[in-house]
Length: 195
Image: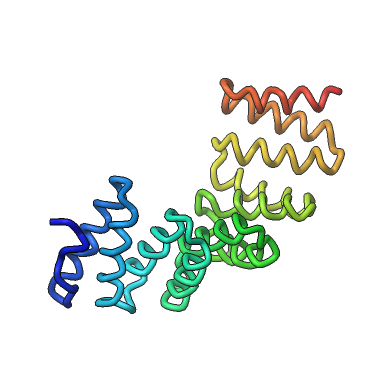
């Protein structure tokens, strides 16, 4: 049965609607997933996971302003919801609202410093604001959280490079190139240190 044709969610069937929404979302049928998640969210307004999936669906559908409000609603239910903090920060960045995104992403790093994308995303936002010294410190956290992440390592090199610390940047870029030997970008970055 198509999601939009299902009866209104009740306390008994909201889980079915939620699960159907998840199935549709994973199949790339986001508009149909939204209808299911909205029904489940109406039946469970205090359930952060249900509300989060609705917010994420809105973001994927490109309705970022609605998604931002929905992620904020999730955070009112559970202030330490790491994925809601991350997605809110990303949505704000995508809309060019970097000054608004920075405290959200900083809170994410404070709440969950080992979240795989927390420090990396905050560092990227800081670099957009030409705050390479702070970005360096945050990228170092990202590298500590995941030493095998070539992206975090490369971005640390970029922060060092923007501070004109060429020798350090070269060492870090070399490490990024070893972590991702097939990445031409990382090898190119290493070459910029030698100029």
